[in-house]
Image 1 (cartoon, rainbow, N blue to C red):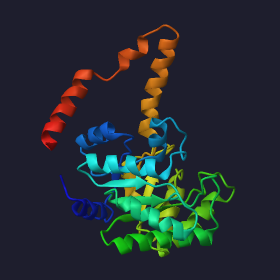
Image 2: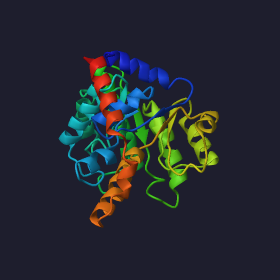
Image 3: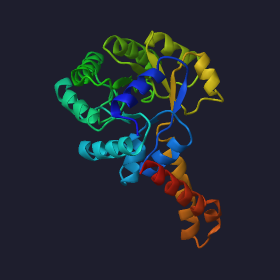
Length: 276
């Protein structure tokens, strides 16, 4: 298995050129399966993690989330980026030690949102100071974790959401973010605006409601990485919900779509042998 330092160097290199997909596993098994498909990096998902514990997105406590992130980072040979929500703190001085704890899980990157636990955007000056605090914590650690700064202005459906998000990511880039991320921008024009506002910094796009845009299209727009957020977790839940409804109504048809147990057993046996 690659060392943590090697993973962090590889993760930075991925952001320097080209465009890659960074899928979001929701547990250790899905992380191992996705790694086996040849992806170059993985990212955790706060929503997928929360649902796996039976909570809504954002309701997991800091320590439980850190345990989850550490599990994903430890089980994968690939660089892992942590969806660290708002860093479980509002004030920059409280955010910094939490970022240090996240770094300690062995991740190659982490993201910080500009939205509090009540789904309210932080004042822009506070949001910028929070990015600076995260940047300082990473620099003091000295191991090269990649910092992504997110603006939720579009996701929160503010009337001025797109314009406000652009204003924020430009400031976040200046404050030291390595990668900029505005969930729910989904047209060529919007994405091009984000890439321009980010300057030379890398841009992450969420693969949700992209209207047929392909990875090649996003690469041509200057996007560096594409994540899926809770998409894979929602796909898994769709299967559970569909089959569960069938079972509750006395039918068993949906189980015909289940993944073959033999395929899963073979993969995990071979993967375990390789890792031992």
